[in-house]
Length: 397
Image (tube, rainbow, N blue to C red; front, side, top):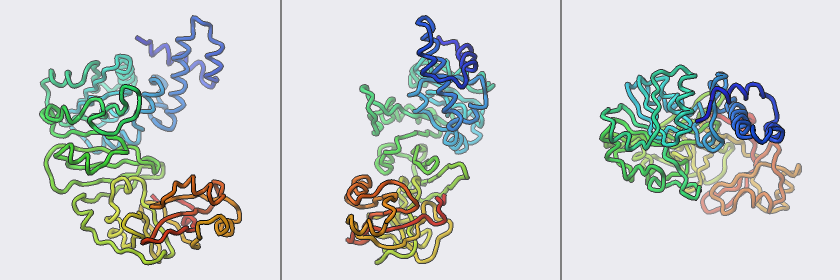
């Protein structure tokens, strides 16, 4: 078992060193420990932005890169802890690096962390001690067997199933993940009031709700405007599944929700023309699927049923996403684009357009960059290009 105190101490002595040079200079007999020191230095560097509260604690140890990549960010973990709130007990059955468990332990009375990997479980136990989280109890072993032999009933059970197959390829479907949530659904629900499942950002929300059954709420979590997590809260049957879309970024939080069943009933107007302003919903809302909801909520017209862009003559100040001012329509050929973008560069975006942005950018001869956007889209049955700029040059929520 690794001596995490020694690794942390040695890494502190080499802070600021080039990891590659450290490995090259290390004698053969010291390469194994130096490899662990380099892993620690890489983790410390990543923590500054992904887990700032851990970065502030000099005693924290970090796992290998893959485990760090698969771990929640601190913002996402704290959001989940806030959703769960001040519960009495929680079991995290896919402990991993322990970021979620550590966040839960800040709110929940007693947290049981279970992880089958011996090294990760030892690291989590070490970090729990370094953070003085005496209510976080770490266990190593098969989490479902642990649950079967544990007589406790938990307020919450949390699972983030491994989304890679035996060849290391990414998977999305619950039945392809480890553990298979669908196979063990009855056991899990017999031991908790609420089951929170983290799924791939690529998951189909309607299909997942049908598979899981008794979904109370779906949480779509974006961090810095990029969709990172889709969470399903399973407990009691309901016809009105709430879709809660959240965007967490450095400047604040955007948080809204709609009812899945009522999305199809939302009143939508379709625009016959492109008006002064164009709106693109943020990543969380786009993943949540509230395309009709957002049109009704903000009183704006949709470009087409399958074009998730919206337009209006007057500015919607608080629209949750990017707001553009439309400067002109541009035929999507090289000559017209060259005239519309004399600087020869723009950010190319395609929405409901039969060509990827990178391919279109190459076709029309634009370089990436500048202050303007070329948005290729479709209104009705008409394909069009739009020269746009961000309102105020910024992203609004």
